[in-house]
View 1: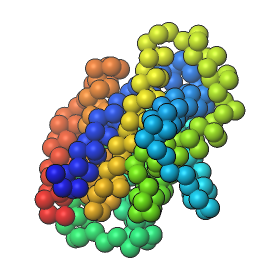
View 2 (view 1 turned 90 degrees about the vertical axis):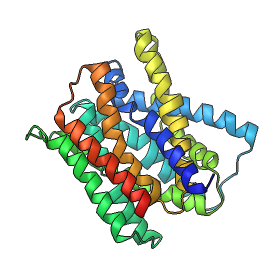
View 3 (view 1 turned 135 degrees about the horizontal axis):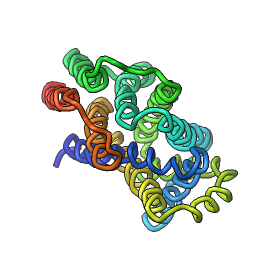
View 4 (view 1 turned 135 degrees about the vertical axis):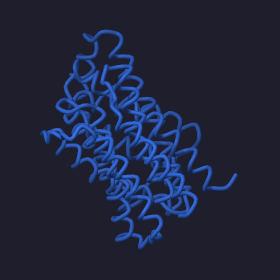
Length: 287
């Protein structure tokens, strides 16, 4: 199997666990505030990754790489998760997932500046048509309320784009997906330590269901999801090969939100979903 197909499989696996984070987080944040939720979730993921890394071997960063991993811990973990949780307190999970789908465009622009990665004209065309599909999902009813949560989600789009660039940087320096994910999440967990004592006390008073979802968010959406994403970014010939898979997230998140939270999807989901899937197919065929 070629690296291209390995990267695509990893990207699809990432979407499978990341998309569920939108409705699951929106549910859990009703029981625990955004700061403590972020700290506990990242701590769970960091412990799991670190234990696995010890068994498989973990490369230790050197010099300025420590600083870059701290930035990754903020932009992809603790800072990202806090704003993500706060955003989902004011906007539906489907809307949040649509806004997060702006990430490939922002990341592509940063990669072009930092690594001089050039995307073909066809690649740009299908990137924008994929975003058109996202816009159809978002604007189908003709109303888009701009709330504080929307601005917070837009901020994390920029933050996660920086995280993606850093993962690409570490991948080119020989770090494995497990190395990159573990150190960035460990740095995020360390930064979240002040919130951990009260966070674990809070979850003791929570019902079993949100606690189980919180554990899922830590082990699957964080540890497994970030590991698969780092592998996809590190394996792909170009980061743009896998970034467009993020456009699938709104479709999956909206479907899960329907069954879990009762958020009813409209016709825009079906039409926009077809545009998104078609754009992904054409992008990977003619990239």
